[in-house]
Length: 346
Image (cartoon, rainbow, N blue to C red; front, top):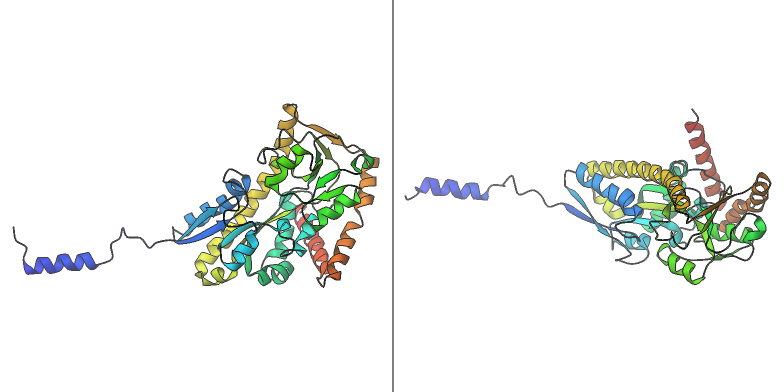
């Protein structure tokens, strides 16, 4: 049956009209990070964030992961230059780019991941001292930060129970503050990244390190970490979930709100996961007969604290010597931690 001219024109008009099934293509944002898709940095961190963003943006944003340093080793530099739009950045792996962020590595400043992360966010959020001094100059905008639980001393051959037992050990320490902590204990700091840890411990390149015990299984280290020591707060390290500042400015305000909300929910989720993971991992390692846990006596705690006490002032002085306001950053973090502690007790 032949179509009339009117019908043909109508069909043509319908074909030209926007079709409801032809949804607008999402904006794809590449996310660079150093570990695998099976590691908690993705499953509980960047991947958790990606899921929230894609869902709450109604599909307008899509996060495309590039794990295991596929785009390059320094996520902070990659994001700042626009090679990736977002990065989960281990700031201690990029000390030249984020020297002041090493304040979280100082011993004795936080007791939990959630407490440390909440305090550090005051420095990292817009208007914070690190946002002004480190992130903006690197063309970054922080969406979330996570401070790991206080690191423990782990070793694979020598059990440590006193300060003297640490003397001469080669210990993994990434970052200026961790270096100072290891030296203050009489050991030798060695820079080793997470992916290099297993081989370094197995071959004896290092004897141990200051390490988050909760990452033992994720890092495949359950067969090479034999001892851990509790009672000394040995500092920590931080992760920065950051976006390229130019990309951030190009986003619509509602999408910026989605990303910030997702970042803060991810920060809270990941810190709670990490605090629980430390306890669960240690219990599992002990139950499997893989790990021996030592605890400092009260007298030894005092000795360790005395050895570590000068590090904060030394860190600040070292930063000041390079023209960086170390004392102001340390005061800001201590003040933020005081506010967090006060809020948690009320």
